[in-house]
Amino acid sequence: MVKLFGKEYSKEELLRRVGDVSQVGGVRLIELSDGKERGVRAADFRTGTGFNFTVLIDRGLDISWAEYKGMSLCWHSATTQVAPHFFEPEGFGWLRSFYGGLMVTCGLTYMGAPGDDPAYPIQVSGAPCCELGRVRLGLHGRASNTPATNVWVDGRWEGNEYLMWVQGKVREAVVFGECLELERRIEARLGERRLFVKDVVTNIGWGESPLMILYHVNLGFPLVDEGSKLVVKARSVTPRDEEAERGLSEYAVFTGPKGGFKEQVFLIDVEPDPRGVCEVALVNEGLGLGVYLRYRKEELPYLTEWKMMGEGIYVVGVEPGNAFVKGRAKEREEGRLQLIKPGESRSFSLEIGILDGEEEIRSFKERCGVK
Image 1: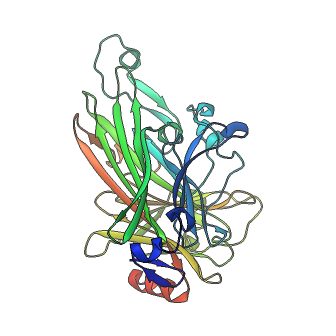
Image 2: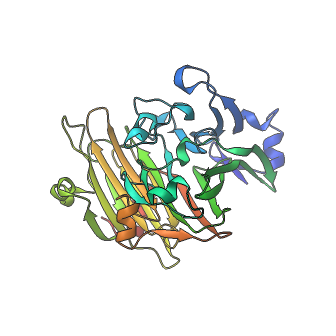
């Protein structure tokens, strides 16, 4: 059954009331047309609940705009949703095309801080990567700036539920090196306040490769505001550096914008429930609004919090991943770097949804053991 406007409808009952399902929700293919975003294909989702979001097909099938009942859920940077050909992979150049948005994918063979690391795999004598033995890696990888292929945007009835989706493939490949392919499907249902990201990464090359992936969820005003809180059952919270050390006691509490604020990054070990599922949410009890993430600990064992209370750059990143964000060399050194063999596939899934009202927020906090 589809729950809309306080009532439940069967497929037949709903279709008797509309000329087409697009009257109440659905997904459609669109194209952006102005400035640096010109030509970017996108899939626009409406769930009929006030939860609407847009997936940028030419930006790695990542999620840019997202709103609930007219309120933005995510932070938007000053770069805007630029086309992928503006990508600058060296050093911190990734930041010139980092639009923020609800979810940006970092990876697939590297993410986190820039730095040098051994090239993978070394296959052919005389190839540039073999001569150097090391590669210079920029911030957060290439996935979010790679257009998807084999794209399918559609919706259909499954019994009395209406399912809508976008799916496609994103490939990271280089001659004499890695060849990984991400097959992504993002789904939502009419009448629900949540979405599902279903990813499968396959090594379609002939050598073992690093596999690093991070789901960079960027929450912003009005959800993020004075008094907002991070709700998470944490085994431990580790500051990345001295700046984060100074803010460790308040890692889960947020203020209004502050001039001169320096980013603080925390590495969180989340306690999963008995099924192995981790839950984390950012809630604004004054608004009666929250956004939660749900994922499996075995797939995404590490959670990074990016706390940035600056003016204009006023955002909280809630970022599950299969590594922390210290860069590939450091992750390998500290034993967190995962490798994927030729022909091997790894699955990752993420649910992002809305907490609406005092009761839903209270129930979520109780499950996490947070007052």
